[in-house]
Image 1 (cartoon, rainbow, N blue to C red):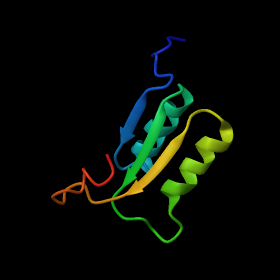
Image 2 (image 1 turned 180 degrees about the horizontal axis):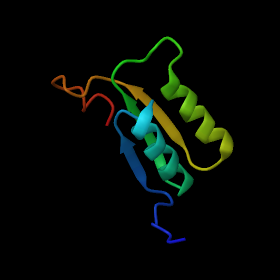
Image 3 (image 1 turned 135 degrees about the vertical axis):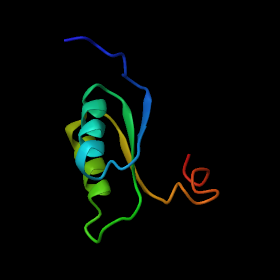
Image 4 (image 1 turned 90 degrees about the horizontal axis):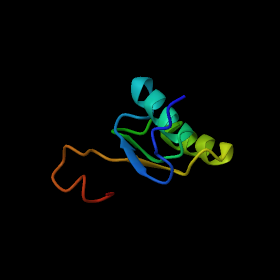
Amino acid sequence: MIDPGLQGRVAVVTGANSGIGAVIARVLAGHGALVVIHYLDAPPTDPGKAYAVEFAFKGEAGALSVGEDIRRAGGQASWV
């Protein structure tokens, strides 16, 4: 397998609490990236945080979950 050289790098994945975004976040974490899991609205069960915990316990990489509307003025600056 080709090593993409992501060990220790930071990856911000928007929409990462479900679907394709979640798969991308998992793959990046599996390659050693620190993954910032972004989602627009946190549902009551907050799957973004669940993914962050899953990554941390697997020891694949660190992860941080952020629920923020990045379309809002200043929304990006509040968590980047």
